[in-house]
Amino acid sequence: MKRHYLSEDFQVSNWENLKPFFDELKSRKINAVAELKQWMKDYSELEAVLNEDGAWRYIKMTCNTQNEELQDSFNYFVTEIEPNVSPYTNELHKKLVENPFIDQLEKDTYFVFVRGVKKSIELYREENIALTTELRQKEQEYGNISAAQTITHNNEEITLQKAATYFKSTDRVLRESIYHKIQARRAEDENELNKLYDELIELRKKVALNTGFSNYRDFKHEELGRFDYSVQDCYNFHTAIQQHIVPLVKQNEQARKSALKLGTYKPWDKDVDVEGKSPLTPFTNGSDLTEKTITCFSDIDPYFAECIRTMNEMKRLDLESRIGKAPGGYNYPLMETDVPFIFMNAVGLHRDMVTMVHEGGHAIHAFLAADLELTEFKSTPSEVAELASMSMELISMEHWEAFFPQPEDLKRAKKEQLNDVLKGLPWIASIDKFQHWVYTHPDHTVSERYAEWMKISNEFGTGVVDYTGLEGNLQRSWQAQLHLFEVPFYYIEYGMAQLGAIAMWRNYKLNPKKALEAYKKALSLGYTKTIPELYRAAGIQFNFSPDYVKELADFVKSEYDKL
Image (cartoon, rainbow, N blue to C red; front, side):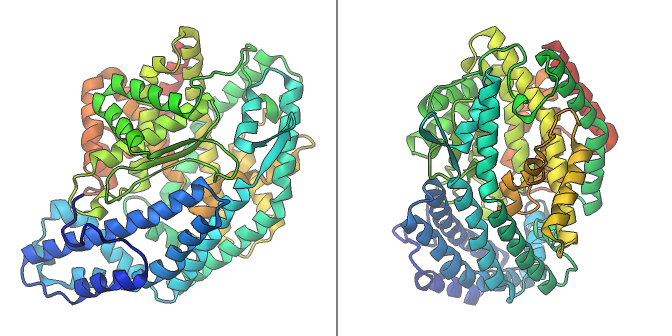
């Protein structure tokens, strides 16, 4: 993006060098609709520069959590810049909605944006600024705790992500040993993570009460801009998954147990190949993963490959797991340069390859939305952002020969993927249902929290895996889900998007050209349309009714049975 409002050499260093721009925008006279549009463009440019600066501080910190300077840089942004920006953001939002020319803006283009601005004003409370700053800092503690979790195997210190690769080993004794080492290491941080979660719940409760809500769940539903579905829809989603997905997952688990000929099917048996084959190895290192992703994407659409190639050339990829790196994976949009950053912890597994094409879908979304006029137009809600990435997982599956040149390996990989699609939905539903309970019962004790998690785990579990003697590991298993700590309530979107992605994949199998055109069209709209309208643009429904969930589940099962 070429700058027009800020000079090309301007850099965010402190609040003092930012403040004059916010003051100018706040005091500027707007006497015509054209002037209002220019004001919005200038404000958008300032937001893009500021967002990208904050993004880089976060990216660098997560790439190396052991570097105190990078930690301090991020914390400075959170404590010294964001709290000063927040009141100005509210004032500028009010300036926009109170301007007499706002009614002359094209509704087709600006409706969703203005709707979000009005909600932001409605939820703004000055007393929440300090609380939000405290929350942002506390939320990062989870990444630091997790990044320090390692085990020793064969006299080598390895991350838990790398340790998990041994669950694919055909050596059951080794798998069990690794499982116990991982769980023992997680247990060391159990009390600290419970304490951190308690502190986060308390802070979040204060934010909600300050804003006039009786609980944080209802506040967050509004803050996340869930205009197009209700809290009750979330509960309906849980019910549909329990009714129509859990039975299929149970069938698959029972088939695995039977094929492995095990008397007891333990948690360390869930990932090993039932035919005793060694783990799939779709790539050797980060560079190989990048090249193969480019080849795969090129087979779908050359433009998709070009996106990843550009990111690679601009050093916007950090793919391999290492000690001191934060857990998880993400695609971080960079709103000024419009070339995002992919961060992940690859250790050579099939799951890592899927993560790469998933984050690649997010990246393509950023490229397709890059030409939209305002920064906020590019800030798509998670229900749509995850549709882009999860659809890419399934669409790319039709072109995985780049990763699996042997037909037998390709077939195995596809079966694993479809298994994971089904397995993921009950976990998503259980994490979301857990959060609904946590924040509508904010004064619960740790033992009550564990009891509720075990109850929910039973509802969405299959009962096939034997946890006898391992109940303590199961009751704290929620602690491994970083979303609970860092981005509360951002998780059910994966489930909604997964259903959408299955429908996109079904369309792609029927008519690849037409499906891709719809996919690209929907993503290029950013957030200029409502979620149901964006799904319709993609040629699918925004729907999680029991009947629709069953229809999609039956399709996945039929495709799985063909393999």
